[in-house]
Every structure is written in structure tokens, then in C-alpha cells.
Image 1 (cartoon, rainbow, N blue to C red):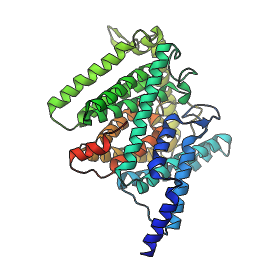
Image 2: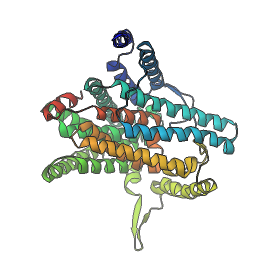
Image 3: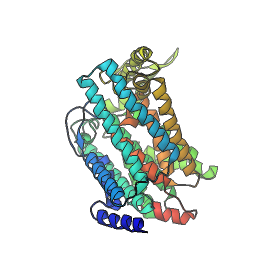
Image 4: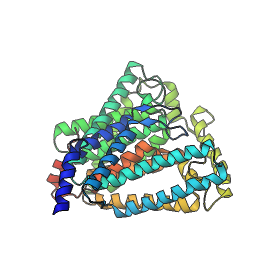
Length: 436
């Protein structure tokens, strides 16, 4: 009794400072917009920056630690055991791998950079467990998702507005428009994929014309933002995400077919509406990648296929590095100057077969968890499952799934999906499908 009283009293004292109902929506804003003290480079590279999300996570960690100590309750609630255990094993290997990197890098600046990136991974590792312990009801998740979708709608609208006004000259990732939020067109593409798939998932569960209009317009704007980003890997990921949504959407075949028609119309409308604003360069990048020849379909001999050929040529270099230490790997973040691009090759080279096995187990546990949660018809888990599938595909051509901001969003979505659903579909809709 005394322990319970102390716990409630400590929670009351701390909630006025960092209440979960506003700190997690704030974290969502930080992950999307990521105000930062820029130290150089771009996300996924060897350079780091001090971001707002780092400060918010530090606040969460401080609150969590004080709440546990003042409440004399050191137990941590873990509701997603399989994912948590596999993440724990993978993180343990990343720590080991970082010190294995000393063999190849020595105690140099490169190794110190890999150590800093390990701390970044640990930051989101801690966030995943704190979120599980603190988010126990739908209220926090609902407000966080409202903020996320509102942010996605705003960013997509600004992108379209910039495109129409001629401010966004070629693609995101430049100094124009809102490109400075991402520093990389592929990262921008990843965010528009995440926005679009989550909009669509909630649209399928929405009730009421106003909500459907808002969600449909968000999906419409996200597709335009994706095209403007110029990221072909994100485009391929988006297609896979849409297929995942359709396959795992619960309901009769007729509803799935109508959903396919609706998606096709929305995507077609999005593409048609921006034809007059997209440059010939962009159109060539998207449509002139392959050519049909008597010997079959081949990569075109133009700038549209140049980056694909570059990535293919780097596979041989990655395989050569992997053979140097196939079991233990060369060390976490030891391939910074190799520009291998393919995240799975990077996993093999840096973490070896042991680490790659832990990666596969971790991703498989996420898939199984989201698939199980989706059995009850949960729009959050369906959207997260499609986003996860899309990120796995995009990581073939970059570090999409390991970018800290994206990892943070994915972890939070997984936790939101874990909130126990009530069986009454009307209650589910009332709790979760109020995004704006």
C-alpha cells in the first residue's frame, strides 16, 4: 500500500513536468520535422547532429528514471516480448560489433564515429522500452497519431504548394522548399511513403465524409510529394506497401477489389495533376530507366539508370569486404567510406553472419507481431505493417530502415499497435480513427 501510494504521488509530481499525453505527440513532431544543430553531412552518413528528438527522448528518459526511483518500483512493463527480446539480442551484438571494429579501424576518428552511432541506436532502443512501459491506453496513441497525420498533411501540402509556385525546382533534398528537413531525396521519399500508407490505412477504417475527405486528400498530397522527391527506391517501396495493405486488409474480396480501384484512381489523379509542373528531367528519371531490346529488358544507357548501375557495381565491393570477415563482420558502422548503399550488404559486412541472423530474427518478430495484431482489424497495425514492408524494400537501395528518425517512428507505431483493442468495431473506430 505504501509503495503504491508513493508511486502515485511521484507520478503526480512528474506528470506536470513531462506528461505522456503531450510528450509523445511532441516527440512525433520532433521526429518528423527534426529541428537540429547541424554538424555536417546527411542522415545515414558519418556525420551527426543534435536534434530536437534527442532532447525529447532525454526528457522521457529522465522522467522515466525519476518515476521509477521515486516510486520505488524498478519493474519495467514489457508488452511486446518477442520483438523486445530480439531487439535486445541485436543490440547486444551491435555493442560487441562496435568493439570488433577496433580491429579494422583502430582507435581512430572513424571508430569514434561508429561509437557515436552506437549511442544513437541505444537511444532509440531505450525509447522502445520506455514507450512500452508508459503507453498503456489509447489516449496517448490517438493524440500522437493525430499529430503525425496532421504533420504529414502539412508537409505534403507545402511540397505541392512549393512545386506549383516554382520554388521546388527539381526534387526534395536540395536547398529549396522543405528539402532541408531531410537533406536527402530518398529520406524525403521514405517519409512520404510512411505518410501515404498510414493515411490510406486509416481511410479504410474511417467513418464520416469529412474524415474521408481529409484522409483522401492527405494520401493524394503524399503521392505528389513522393513523386517530387525523385526517389525511385521510395516509389518501389510505396508499391510494395500498397500491395501489403491490400493483402492484409481484412474483408471480402469485393471490398479489396473496390479498394484497388479506389487506390488506382487516387494515384492516377495525383500523377495527372502534377504533369504540367514536373520537369522533363524528372519524367525521364521515372520513366526511362529500362529499354526493351531483342535480347530482353535492359537498363537504359542514360542518366536515369546511372545510380542503379552504380549500386549494382558496389555489390561486388561489398561481397569482397564480407569475405574478409564473414562470421563476425568488420564492426558496426565500419563501412562509412565505402558507400555500399544496400543496407543488407552493409549488415553482412559490418555485423557478419551472426549479426545478420539477429537482424533477420528482429525483423521477422516485428512482422509476426504486426500480422497478429492486424487480425482484429486494427488500422494502426495494418498501416505499420505496410510501412514496415515498404521500408524493407527501400533498404535494398539505401539505409531507410536504419535512419534514426524513421526507426523512432516505427518503434512508436509498434507500441501503439500493441495497445489492447476492444472487440467492438465501433469503439475501435471511435478511439483510433480521429486523426485530425
